[in-house]
Length: 312
Ligand SMILES: *[C@@H]1O[C@H](CO)[C@@H](O)[C@H](O)[C@H]1NC(C)=O
Ligand SMILES: CC(=O)N[C@H]1CO[C@H](CO)[C@@H](O)[C@@H]1O
Image 1 (cartoon, protein in one colour):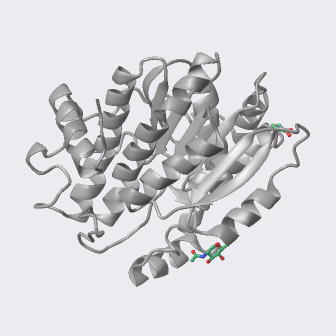
Image 2 (image 1 turned 30 degrees about the vertical axis):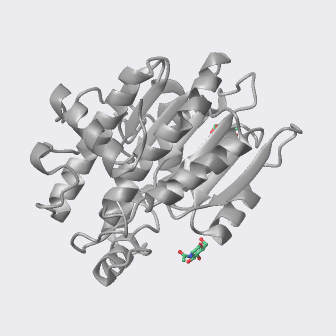
């Protein structure tokens, strides 16, 4: 049975690090990313360096304005604008982040979109949804590793979480990584989910002192549907999330999802390595796991090339 949300909130409140934590939320201007950022701000009482990355500056401003006022003079809450669907923007924003902070304790990646369209390539030749759900996340981690290592070396937390769909994936097609030939919405959803597992495992093997987590947020009532480019999804979202809809009672609120995932990040993830956590922040170990060593290596090589990254 899932722990009650009040038990989770109490557990969360026990988080009081001896240092001023730095947390970066990529895609933190809406949805679950926003939920986790707000929970983090509440539980640190605003005494943290919080950086939100996204496209919507007015959303970011109002989220930041709602954070508790910190008492620590070194606390800071800021927004950096970035359209993360392009790898060149990710590259630039990574440099920007490294100039604003030398260490990162928590890196939370949740950029996303809902779409019913087919393959929709960016000018860089990557499907836009796959860019948000996988490639940009990989590239942010890659660029921000030095700041995570620095936090760990100081004896502090250093954890990365990608919020997508741990435990809901499928088998990867090694002959078509990036789905240039065989794209379909379901193939993209299933395979990109497994890409996230493989990404976290490979990073964990390369940086064994850090924690890399793939999380499933559950079915959350957020505005991701109403912000979708697809009119069908916008209408369906309106119907499903209307307070009159019987379905709306099934969905977790963005706030509760944020609390559960923050709890998973702070409490379930008790050490370094690759982790998978479920909608109540619980350890789901290898439930519905489709990875293997060969896929992990091949995906890594494909991604280095597709994101235009340099790896020694
Ligand atoms: C930006 O966020 C605000 C506040 O959440 C919202 O009303 C607005 O629709 C968003 N704009 C875009 C372009 O998504
Ligand atoms: C910092 C914070 O949000 N603490 C809350 C943790 O949960 C307990 C129980 O719900 C609340 O009373 C605290 O305010």
